[in-house]
Length: 479
Image 1 (cartoon, rainbow, N blue to C red):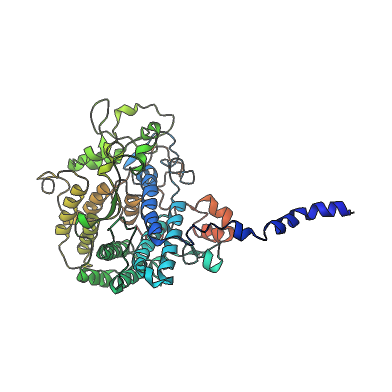
Image 2: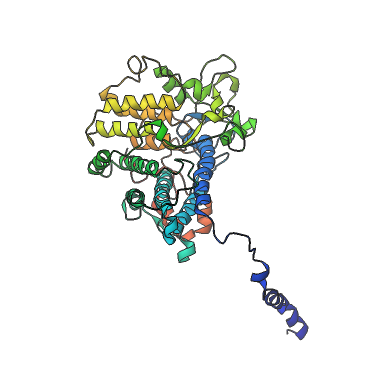
């Protein structure tokens, strides 16, 4: 039986709460604080914050899946236990944080006409981030995601990758709408916070159109891209030179250097050149090997080691090439790459090779290679495109295009792995001590947090991927 004294004790916290909150809003309001975040601050955060976090994630995990590098310790991810991220291997929160912040920019741009200049760039970034996300994981929360503030939905359903690409409000639609918004903007408000193009809206139009080319080519096994590609090609506003690249520069030193530069030396030293990379660079005598790697301390050679090495294997790390100085000592020479002229040219070369557009595949291919060497601050040998395995051969055209793109994409998140899944090039090697039954993963697994925080929707998505298997292909992957 509850006594009067015990009843008072049980009610005391509630009485104190109501007594203390009568003037809570007045007492705890900082009149000097901004009432809402400024879109220019959020734009800078989306661009730099995402690039900074994803450049590290892409180096320590994406480059293992693409086999640019191998990892000799703490290497569960390199052995394809993708549900066991260690130094990296968990891009989900990076992408959703950026998508959430970007959605706020988009909302602000539509709520206030004085901020309309942000609508086009926000739509481009929404498409870019969504594409990166769904290309890794397949079906993901998208149309109901990022809307918690407006709709109260905190457990969004998983959407089909096909819809994320092709439905209204999806990747391709957002890129078209971005160009419309950018072309229509007549206001005087500048685009502040833009570390990619310094407020130049023409740069965002080129970025949008080049990204649309990339998206169309990525899903081209599922849907004929010819008509849309020709429309973009006719428009002509695409990234055509390295001066127009959608990139931002890392600094030579902290705090804005390439993030791997400040990793502890022990982590730096567990990344070695892979056997795959050794063969690809050596095959064409590509001098970018000296930019991307530093030679073996033992013999001065660019020697690689097999991916997914067994932890019990006895090796001498100094026998193998390590990451080059551009990743640590000279990061001022390095960029975070959203999209470039050389990638656009490689895409156009492939489109021409497959007859999607009128044009000469070889011309685009050779232009892309020259621009990629320039991007990596490496002089191209005069005979590189005539006397090496990089020389154009139409019968091997797709292999050449994707292999050269693979070389230039080192460190660029998970791009090399995505293109390998789409095309089968370059030929990646089996890992030594696979924790995935010898199968090469073709998607990233949903993180364990999703099972805890979005259980019912996660269960549906997991069932569609054979229990969240990394061996179930995403929608566009028909190789």
